Amino acid sequence: MNVVKKQIALVGAPVDEGAGQKGCVMGPDAIRTAGLAGTLEALGHTVVDHGNVVRSDIASVAPPNPVLRNFPDYVAWTRALHAKAAELGTAPVFPIYLGGDHAMAAGTVSGQARAAAELGRPLFVLWLDAHSDFHTLDSTDSGNLHGTPLAFACGLPGFDDLLGTPLQHTVNPENVEILGVRSIDAAEREMLLSHGVGVSDMRRIDEEGIGTLLRPFLDRIRQADGLLHVSLDVDFLDPEIAPAVGTTVPGGATFREAHLVMEMLHDSGLVTSLDLVELNPFLDERGKTARLMVDLTGSLFGRRVFDRPTQSF
Image: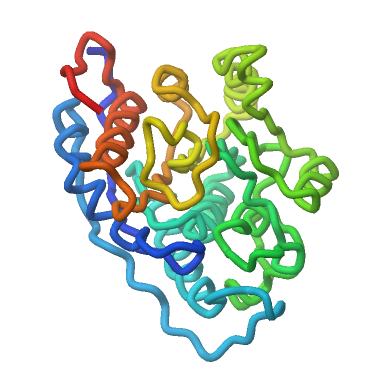
C-alpha cells in the first residue's frame, strides 16, 4: 500500500450537553471499542490515545438567550477543546477528535484555526452533515447548541463568552464546504448565502455526483496551500446504515458515497485533522454505526477495497 505513515493523536470529547438527546457522552469509548486504534495501526500509522479531555472550570456565565440549553457546559467544553486543538494543531501529529455531539467542534475547529494561523496557512473545513450548524446564539429556536459551532468558528457575532474574548482566528466562511445537507432552517439559509459558505445538498449530490462536487473544493485547498479539517457527523450517513444518532434525517449518503469521499480525501493528502461526532451508542444496533465510523476512518487513512476485510454492517 502506498500510505504515508502518520503520527495520530486520539482525543476523546465526551460532550452531550449540546444535543437534544443524551448518549453522545459514550461516543468516544464506543469508537475506541470498535477498534479505531487497531485499524489505523494495521495501516502502518502510529497511534497515541490522549484520553478524554476534561472540560475547563469556568466562572458562572449567563446565557445570552434564555432558550439556550446547557450554555455554561458549552463554554467549558469549547475552552478546553480549543486549547487542546491549538496545541495539537502545531505539533507533528494528526489529531482525531472523538465525539461527543457536534457542539464540540466549536472548540476543535477554532483551535485548529488558531494553529493554522500560527503556521501561516489558511484552514479549510469540510462539514459532512445533514445540518449546516450555522445558527448563532440569537437565531436558534431549539436552544440545542450543537447547531451553532460552525457559525462560531466562522466569526459570526454574539459568541464572545465562549472563549472569554472575541475569537481572533476565524475560519473564512468561503473556505467552508457543507456536503450532504438536507435540513437547513430559514435563518441559517440566509446567513449561509450572505457569508458565501459552500453548500451541496443531497439533491445536488444525486444530480451531479459526490465526487464531482468534492473535487473543486480540494483543488482550491491545494492552490491555497491550505490545511483541511474534516468534521464527520453520523447523520451525514443515511440512517439505514448509521442509526446511532439522535437527529436522523432520511436520505443521507450511502455506504459507497461516504467511502468515496474518504478515499478522495486520502488521495488528496490535504486532511490534517478530523472530528467524528454525534455517535450515540444508546441508539446503535450492536455497534453497527461505531464500526462504520471506524471503517470510514480507515478509508481516510489509506485502506483500499483490496485491503478491506469482509464485514457485516
